[in-house]
Structure formats: C-alpha cells, structure tokens
Image (tube, rainbow, N blue to C red; front, side):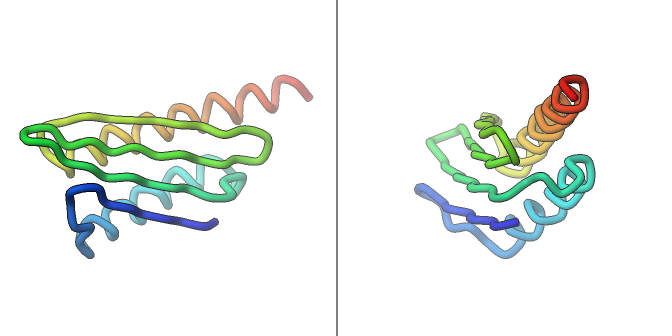
Length: 97
C-alpha cells in the first residue's frame, strides 16, 4: 500500500503521520489488503481543519473528507468514514460474486 500525506497551510508533523498510519492499519485489516494507495491532504483555515483522503481500492476509487475544529479530531472522523466506506465496498463486492 502506497501512502502519501500532504499538508496545505500546515506542516505535517511526525505525530500526525503516526496517527494516520496507526489508524490506517485498522482500516487495512478490514479491507483484507485491497487498498492499493492512499493520498491524504491535510489543510487548515482560520478555525477549521480539513482532512481529505483519496483511496484507490481494487476495483473502485473513494474520496472522503472531514472538517473539524481540531486536526486530530478531523483525522479520527475521516478514518471512521473511510472504515465505513471500505466495509460497504467489501460487502457489495462479496454480494456480487
């Protein structure tokens, strides 16, 4: 799995990278390794922090965003959304077969 993390108007610290990789391990376990690449973009405007992710799965691309007042909260909400989207994709792909 390829992982890219970019920051717009924000420096991506080691703590943010560690938080993203730790949370992404849980999502990767649920996806059964079907995640090919993930591109994260973290941005900050005055009082809002935005975390966005573009996932390339086997057979589908997903784009998920979260906006919160703190960056850590935005990352947590984003990972929950990613987890739900990956599980939905996994269920749909198993139902088709």
